[in-house]
Amino acid sequence: MAYWLFKSEPDAWSWDQQVARGAAGEEWNGVRNYQARNNMRAMAVGDLGFFYHSNVGKAVVGIVEVCATSHPDSTTDDPRWDCVDIRAVRPLKRPVTLDEAKAEPRLAKMALVTNTRLSVQPVTEAEWAVICELGGLG
DNA sequence: GCCAACGTTGGC
DNA sequence: GCCAACGTTGGC
Image (cartoon, rainbow, N blue to C red; front, side):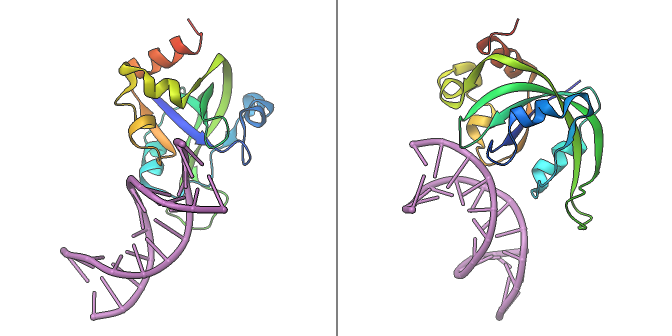
């Protein structure tokens, strides 16, 4: 079981929209970055991820689960781009902002802090636990 | 809205 | 294969 983080601008695709898709989930399409794509190719069904609102909010707002492994991105004919499907699991009790993550020494090496432009990132088990703690989840 | 950081593209 | 130019992301 691995942990990940998915970034989305809420104006383009928000947590509420993700929740509205329910158990069916939604394609995480539109990624046009090799590193992000490679991360998605490495995902397994049942892997968990954080849902992060970039630009507006700048906070981790919820937890998602991978419900389909990588497959061609339906928004392009370019065979280079694959994506996974994810479904909402639960919101954090309180969002964990980027400022909080930056201020937390245990998250100093987290990709969210060190590699701001990567839209699909791996998260370590330790980082996962810290964000859950800050987010009010036992 | 600006701009820094970073990734990609294309000329050589 | 190098590197300058360009495009995009995302914090501020």
